[in-house]
Every structure is written in C-alpha cells, then in structure tokens.
Amino acid sequence: MLLPRLQPPLRAAIASIARSAPSVQSTACLNEAFAALALKPLVFVRHASHAQQGAVNKAKDGPGKRLGAKKSGEQYVIPGNIIFRQRGTHWFPGDNCAMGRDHTIYATESGYVKYYKDPERHPKRQYIGVVFKRDQVLPLPRNSHRRRRLNMVAVKMEVPEVAEGGEVAVSGVTLEGGEGEGRKEVKVKKAKARKGEEGRDLKLRPGYMYRESNWEIGRAAERAGVKVKPFKPRDRWTAWKKREVRFAKNAEKRSLGRKIGGK
Image 1: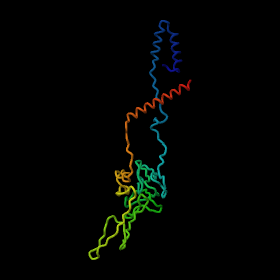
Image 2: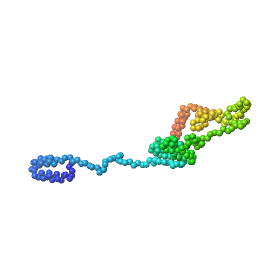
Image 3: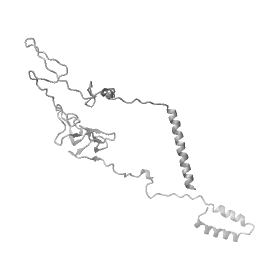
C-alpha cells in the first residue's frame, strides 16, 4: 500500500501520460508508467532513545528485611524471643541461645542478653548469650560452677555428721565398729509412704526428674486399692438399630410439624 504523501504526484503523472497518449494505447502507457515508477519496499529502522531492556532487568529496590539487633545488652528475654536477625553468621549463639535456619539467634531460657567474645572457644567469633542474673559476665571461667536451666546454682551437698547414739535416716544399713571398739548399731528411721505410693521406686531420669516408669505410673490406682467398674460392651448391633429407629421417628415428627405449620 502506497503512502498517502506519494499519491498526489503519482496521480498527476498518470493523468499527463493519459492526455498525451491515444485512448487505445492508454492501458499500455499506464502499465509502462507503473513499471517505470516501480518502488522498492521501504524499510524503516527505529533507533531507541535509550537502551532497550525489559522490566525484569531493571534494578530492584525491594522492602527491607529488618535485619539487626532486636534486643540490646542486659535486656530481659524469655524463651523464643528473637535477639538478632542476620544474613550469615556475624554473631554466633552462646550460652542459653540457639540459631535458626535463617541465622536468626533466639533465646532458649529466660534471662538477660549478653554480647561477648570467647577467645578460648574461638579467637575471632562474636557470641550472644543469656544469663540468669544481670550482673553475670560472659564468658564464664572454664572450671566455674554453672547455673542450671531451673535458675539454680550447682552447689556441693553437705552431709551432716552423725553423733554417737544419734539417729539418721538410712535405708536398711547397719554400721559396725572395729574389733577393739565393739559393735555399734545405728537405728534406722523408715519414712512412712503416703497412701497409694507404697513400694514406689523413684529413679533419676532424663531432664533431672525423679519418677517411675510409665507402666508403674499406670498401676497407681491398683496400688491405692481403687476399683474401677468393668466396662460391658453388650450388644452394639441392637443399640445401633434402636438408634436408627429413634432418629427416623424424630425426623417424621419434625416433618409433620412443618406440614401442619404450613397449612
């Protein structure tokens, strides 16, 4: 299709050729004119005003990830509180802390946050820990006593001295003196067991708990002499049929009530 601006000069040329040539040769002249004016296909090239690129290649400016410290030093935290968000391990978890899969450090115990370095553990790493008292300092000396997770201090137990002729609560143990001193016996006090706890065997289990095995706990009612009425299943098929009949009667009553109300 010719461009609009080329149409007027072409019309004028064709009209002049038609006037000069006889009518018989008008068609041949027109064909010659068109052959002479044969136009080559026009090719247009568009030059971009700036570098061509899609929206995918543009610079991204997404929302911030809110990284950094969420709890400052000596601030009180509870288990699960996030202390520091980071990309990579700029800080490492210390005492009573743990690290998530996105390198987030969070508290595992209640206490106060401490930022510190531990050259004995690693010369360059920085650690975040939680202590149970605000005036505590991290890192703790290697041979010092540790505070446990119940916020208690591990202290050596002191055994009271037994005077001569005294009584001490010992389970079935008889003390004897040397050959020259003669025989001495120590009276034994047996703690009276509470009702339902006769013959209990408490052992230290994981988690610092003194408790029995699960199968022994299940026999607590048997030890206490509690009798449970045995369950009788009876005939479940008959019960199910009665239930179906009862439901059908109730549905029929409801349908009759709707019909009477509609009238």
